[in-house]
Amino acid sequence: MPLGGLQHYTIEPSDLERTKDFYCDVLGLENGERPPLDFPGYWLYSGGTATVHLMGTRKAREGIVVRGTEKKYEDTGRLDHIAFAATDPDGIRKRLQARNVKFREQIVPRTGDTQIFLYDPDGVGVELNFPKP
Image (cartoon, rainbow, N blue to C red; front, side, top):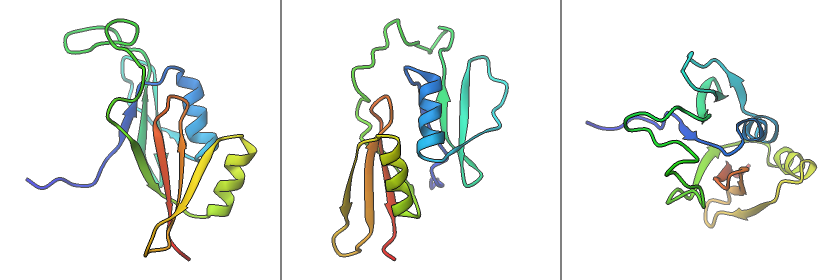
C-alpha cells in the first residue's frame, strides 16, 4: 500500500488566534472552510488545499489528552520542521522583516535553491524552498 502526498499537519497552539494570524499574515495562507467539529480551530489553505490545521482545546475523552492536564509543551517533540514550496524570495524577506520575524537563509549546494527557515509562535520550524531562477 503506497502512501500518497502529505495532506496536512496539525498544530495545537498555545494561542489559537496568534498562530492563525502568523500563518495567514506572515506566510500568506488563507483561512478557509472547516467542518463543524466539536472544538475550536482553523483550516488554513495553500493553493486550494487545507495544509495547516489548527486545533483549539478539546474536551478530554478516551484517547484524547488535552493541554493543561498530562500534556506538556516544552518543545515540539521530535518534529523538526515543515517545508513549503514557495516563490518570490525577495517578497517573503520583506514580509518577514516588516513583521519582525527572525529567519535564516541558505543556498542549497549543487542546486542553488534558496531556503528560508523560521519558527511559528509555538516553535514549530517552517522551511520555505525557492527554486533557483
